[in-house]
Image 1 (cartoon, rainbow, N blue to C red):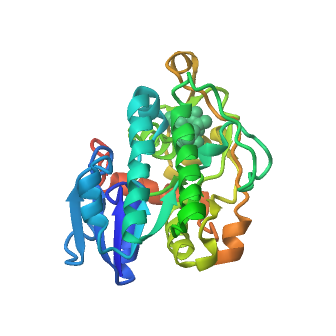
Image 2 (cartoon, protein in one colour; image 1 turned 60 degrees about the horizontal axis):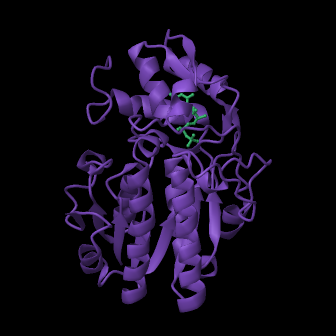
Image 3 (cartoon, rainbow, N blue to C red; image 1 turned 90 degrees about the horizontal axis):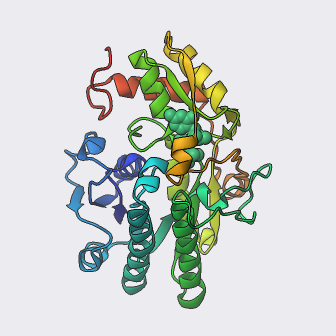
Amino acid sequence: MRTIVTGGAGFIGSHLVDHLLRAGDEVVVLDDMSTGSPRNLLDSLVDPRLTIVHGSVLDRRLLLETIRGADRVFHLAAAVGVKLIVDHPLTSLRVNIHGTENVLDACGETGAALLLVSTSEIYGKNTSDRLHENSDRVLGSPLRSRWTYAAAKGIDEAFAHAYWSEHGLDVTIVRPFNTVGPRQTGRYGMVVPNLVGQALRGEPLTVYGDGDQTRCFSYVGDVVPAMVRLLEEPSATGDAFNLGGAEEVSINSLARRVIRVTGSSSDVVHVDYADAYAAGFEDMRRRVPDYSKAAALVGFDPATHLDEIIRRVADDLRSDRSRDGAGLPA
Ligand code: UDP
């Protein structure tokens, strides 16, 4: 099996690459290394079945050359992270719309099967109890840059679905909800690596706003095998699947747990949103997945407990492989 992973040097992508190599695939990573890093692939770099192509999904010719001859494509290359998106809305729109359009065109031309990695962010401000795949999208203003990501990924999904219904493209969509684990960087705002890093450095943990907003964190090691099984499941084609965590936690309780699990003596500080809002940010109060469809079809089970996830993230940040670990006590 020859498999392409766009964004394969990123957080989720690199775990997927390790998984595919273990399963016996020949893997080609296409990554522009903008937010990803070869460091994430240290476990697999010596494997002769791994090829890394340094390039962008915006480069149509390179993309087509890379995908030609492949059986399947996992498309994870994207501009991600709330901070990056708020700071660079044009990149968010260009990479996430045109990059995906190019991947769809290349798969259409070559016949490769495609897993499109979308996002729970497409539900926007919908705070319903258990967001089902058919739940409404409640998007914020297009003039707020935070929503560029959700808008772009929504277009990607619509594009993929149209390609499937009009041309029979073998494409499946997944929507990860706050996937976390080792190798995720806190540089672009992600809360778990941010808070764990602060706790290990003995700095105050920065909780934005009142901290009562909630998320359901899922472990990358639970999400990645489900992505592969969904692409391999014929009846999943043309459909979308939530992949999220089982436990709803407030960011306040996440911060307390990070302090307890890491044994840190840090305090929690509440950071005012005012500056961030002025820069185009807007928070979501609640985001809870209904992942029963993926559970029923491919046995998706987000079994890894949040305390264990925090422990593994802390171990990773303490290791000398970590990109964000510099200056941490061993
Ligand atoms: N957050 C926080 N402190 C941080 C980073 C994030 O309190 O240092 C909050 C953020 O406001 C949001 C939640 O944690 O309510 C999750 O943020 P993240 O950027 O990880 O994911 P998303 O907002 O996309 O769910």
